[in-house]
Image 1 (spheres, one colour):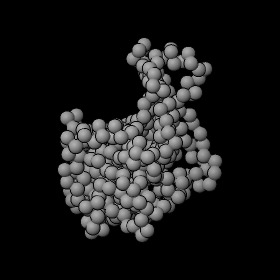
Image 2 (tube, one colour):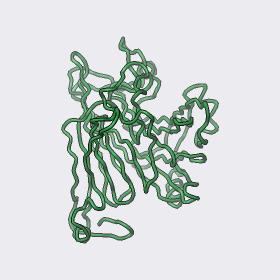
Image 3 (spheres, helix red, strand yellow):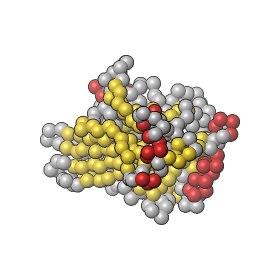
Image 4 (spheres, rainbow, N blue to C red):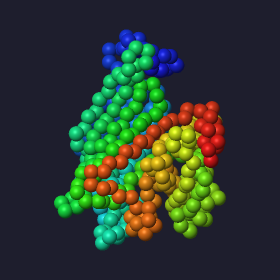
Length: 365
């Protein structure tokens, strides 16, 4: 059954209402035409509940803009979703084309701050965010039979990070959403297709913005410990879980969280704006497996214009590959080895849904 507009429909009942399912949801492809984003392929999703989002097929299959019933969920930076041809690899050049978006991928062999590791100069957050997808398949279809049938839309593709005499690593990504639901799913498989062991750092830079992010928005997480990254963050440790209005001259703060997982090994974290729309409330959550993504960084940046928070599950920290190596936590991929990652992102519509999830999270924290 598909639930739309407060009513349940079988496949045949729903299709009887229209000539094309695109009337209520699905996925379609488009190409950006203006400015530095010209030529970027996009897959545009709608689920029929008010959730819509776009997948940037030429930007590592990142998720760009995302909305729920007209309200933006993600932060959109001033650079826009620039074509990968504009990428600047060295130092902090990644920021020249950091579009923000609901999910920006960081990896595949380095993530976090620029560093020099094992004699190699590495830029901010790696190359994944600028790799175009190949083998792209954007489509949708019914899953199951009869009353159990659900309609799913998806975008699938593969990114390759390779260099002669160096790494040859692929990431195959599938992003999907179901008609009648206010959530999406990311499934990634990373494979070392080369013949040498390579470092592997994987970070999901999930960027939330106004109006979900606003003065009074809260981070609700099953945090067992919260550690500031540096002295700047240490000064704000008492306010890490609440967000201020846009603040002139604000310096970013990052906090490392040690999370408690549920009985299935998943971690769920939430942003909650109970004051949204006169107290109606709006929230969003992330859910991921702790065994594959054991680290979590909260990026708090409440500056003017750059008004964003990043919730970042990862297999690494964000101070650079050299620092992870020195700490003994740097992960590696052996030749032929693969890793699988999964992330669920969903919307909480109203205070009742926020409170229910907050109670479940509190039981673990």
